[in-house]
Length: 221
Image 1 (tube, rainbow, N blue to C red):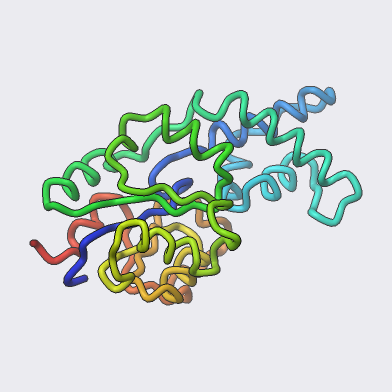
Image 2: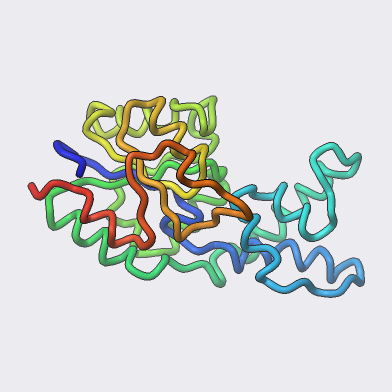
């Protein structure tokens, strides 16, 4: 159990929101535009944590070294911007988790590697984020996770010591960033873990299989 917690910070995709349907749809639209057959949404979901790189790998078998990768990536971003709030929803239990944190007098926020051009429209579209004390995007600081700087910036904006914060994420880089920042860390097993993810090896202080389980890890105030 975490003691002395004053704020809980979360990764965005795969931790607070299920954005896989919109991300997959954006990549699939590129296939359809080229006369290729649609792929099932289930093919895209495990690779959402890798962002554009993961989506293009599924859609076209293309890695970042491909000569056309940058062109395809920007095309993907344009498609994604056009649909990023159509199917994306908070995971079940996230609304109740946030309400419970606020009831306990705790603040909460977001630290994501998602660029602000995508983070801002999503967070503005959902009432859930009206109560967020801070939102740190992938380009808010010069570094992205697993570097600890985005998490340290969140703590600074909250005027809190990192030791008074807990970070929840569904990727190994989240746990690495949280540990490096000196925060308590929680691995979200319900997120986009990808094939063969060895969550136990990440070194998180705790693991949860649903959002509401985070509450059980916090010492009552």
